[in-house]
Image (cartoon, one colour):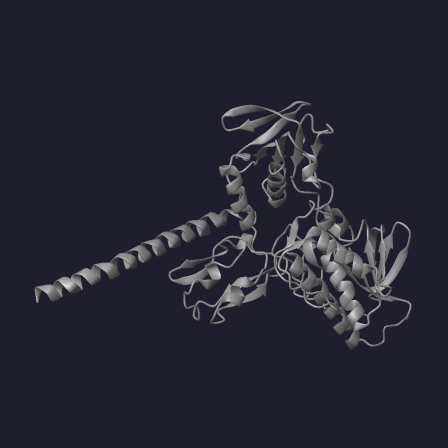
Length: 444
């Protein structure tokens, strides 16, 4: 009998140790999740586009959804159930929904006008101006795959309304004009082509939009995507050059109507429900307009002495052109972090990253992990709670909690965002933030 009790005691301990370890780990994770959720209350931005909605009555607590998100723990476990704890990081990958084995997660759109700093949009991406739509980054959605989807969906809505009103009036009127030849605009044009709608894409710069301004060989897609009329792209990692080459191939088609270097200056709503789009050289009448422009306009300045020097820049294209330099990067978003890491990879560079907050809150998880590696390797020095106060030809002065820090410096890159085209949107009558729209919108 003693041997039997000893046998049970021994194996009870063997089983108990991993169980205790597992329970403690789960409690620790839940504590971290609750702290993250509490911390998240300081952010006023909810998800701006597609985001997960969890049915806790069906959730089985398998944790599969919490580990697949590339943006870094948007979901966590609370009380044994999945919960959205970092909503501001969600940009609509939908991998969590795909990973759920019981269908407890579905992707939903954010409520119309959820953010007062963004244009009001209905669930069909229509603005407060009838028949004027916004797709992609301008509406607050950063993910390229979702921008592609929005551009096509806008055309679907327009086509459905035109089908319900078959008397289109003057045949010379274009069905839809698309402002912007980025992911959303290219997708919208291809869908219009697919559905037989007459369309015209207007691009103020070059085909590709914001993507053309990314650093060379930057990975811009880490998920598969599909444009109308083209087979799905199976590669999961695509460079800037690959995407831009694809856009140029599309816009070179003889049936794809596009005019580059023609900027939309004004949009006027006509009494008959049509819209007139004015550029610097022409006026176009159409039945609908899709604004597929980016949000980045003129770069925001720091407003400090020395910022006018030639060594201060706001965009990095060729990181490998800079070697053996003392470099300051200012900013805390993905653009700043990626620029700092790209410059740190070049021989002889000493890179400092200055950020005004105490930690990086909104960068992609893969960037956060790479940055930690660069910091540990001493290739990048990060100064939190800091801000440049003056720049000279050979130095930069940075305000830190410990006082003014003088750094020898050759180049400064500033990534403080850009002035969104808010004035233009307001000029053409688009409202911002929550708004009760009860009007009926029907295309003429």
